[in-house]
Amino acid sequence: MTLTKRDLVIRISNETGLIQQQVYDVIQKTLDHITEALANGDKVELRQFGVFEVKVRKARVGRNPNVPEKDVPIPARSMVKFKSGKEMRAQVLKLGAKPAA
Image (tube, rainbow, N blue to C red; front, side):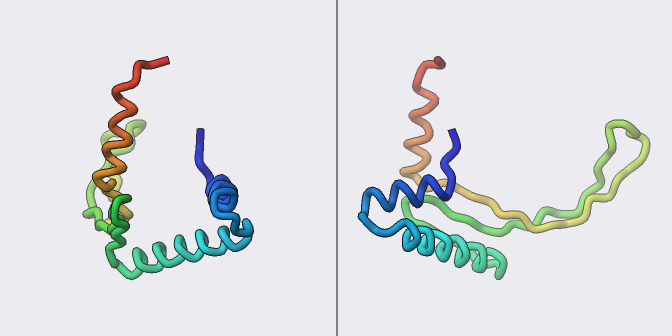
């Protein structure tokens, strides 16, 4: 199952009694500000949830498995890394304790 932005809007609207459009606007603004901060190279720390930060992957040489004798240069690039918070990690670890269905 996938939790979408729409699902979040509906759940929060039902729990708080706020209009769905208001909830959507707040969620979208939050995501916009997180994206903007990361684009500026800032770290985003959300207590009890996790930390987003930008990491730069070094340039490296890769190989095409279909033509292994030819090297393919892979340029350096920035990527977003997420480290979950303690509470989230604890909740997710509980999934491993459940028997497979």
